[in-house]
Image 1 (spheres, rainbow, N blue to C red):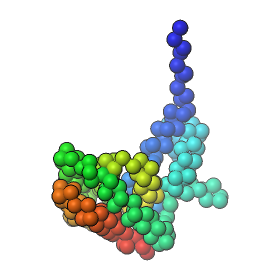
Image 2: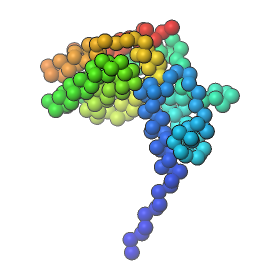
Image 3: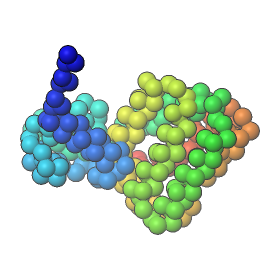
Image 4: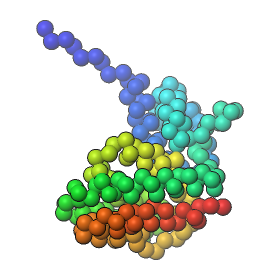
Length: 216
């Protein structure tokens, strides 16, 4: 007799859905810095009870995506200058290393995919779509870094992206970009040439450019 599989816990499934969706919204800058969130509001948005909403918020607070004050107020983080510098330094350390590790596996199909994503980045710039820009820009980097086969390093990098999402939205929303990031072209050229030092330099420049404008 084949044992029946355990039924799926509806509460766990609901919590995972709320967590993943909220996580992407924060990472892509769909929620501005300092914006307040309530469990009731989250429950209403996702049509779930307080329990899945509370569990999703707990996980996001632990990742630094949300901030929980001593009074119990939940909000997206408002980064200090020191915190911005720290997160920028982490990006400058982690992302060139991920790109370097990805280089030996950067075959033609990957470069072609990156070029397609970069075209989408340009389209978002032309539309003045800040959220779309952040989403596609991170997709460009994630697609490359997945080839590094360094999951722990990529997880740390995504946590940095998550903590910076709302602040990056505030920045890109006021920059009024007219051109896509110039360093993406340098990244693609270095990948095609197998130029590891050039790739590191291009990635480092790309992930740190503009961050000085975040400092108040």
